[in-house]
Image 1 (cartoon, rainbow, N blue to C red):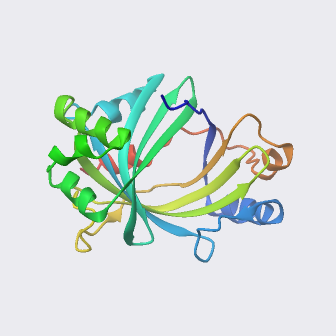
Image 2: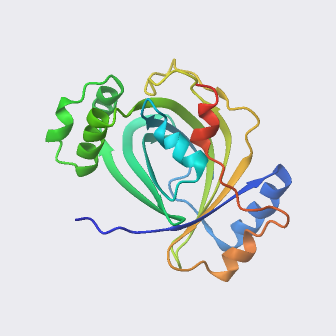
Image 3: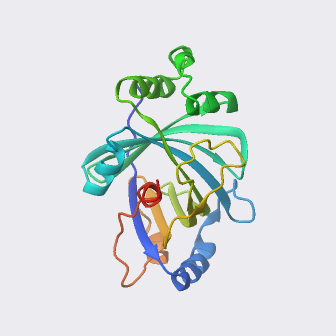
Amino acid sequence: MEEIHYRHEWKHELNYLDLLTIRQRLRAVMEPDPHAVGGKYLIRSLYFDNPDDKALREKVDGVNMREKFRIRYYNGDPSVIHLEKKGKRNGLGTKYSASLTREEAQAIVDGELDWMMDSGRPLVQELYCKMRYQRLRPKTIVDYTREPFIYRPGNVRVTFDYNIRTGMSCTDFLNPDCITVPAGDSPILLEVKWDEYLPEIIRAAVQTPGRRESAFSKYAQCRIYG
């Protein structure tokens, strides 16, 4: 059985001045993510939920133990696609990931599922079971821009997420004609994730006086529109 690896996570909602200030501090003490292009990348995710909106309701209600599934690719390049399951327990986060081909991702979107149990990937098999028996289905596309920074001691990752957009009712996320629109007045979101400890130099760099920890959800924000 795969070992459960929990991560700590902070979220803060920022304004543009906060972004400029904290970005400058982070550049002095952290490395840019080597996968970023020009310091950032574009993320497109397709989130799943059941007809009762279980994942959405658990997030909004702050349920202590919850999970959600999504398929994701970066910078408009569907040659590398990941299926991910994110979980929360007692405020700590987990994430499991499995690779998908473009054809496999499209089959899931189209509801062609029979191949999944023979895929040899436990996460793909788990999604199959939950699509069959919990009626999970693609719900909404979420697009946004991310600026990532890394700090190796403590395995720290700090990101700015902004320009959050929703696919409304379109779930065909590999279709370039499936456009997205701004998801209302979404904030700039600062996320800080780490393992056992958060080094003081990073804690100081991300300080945002007057900004309280946020439970903002990009998925929940985009579900307002479909």
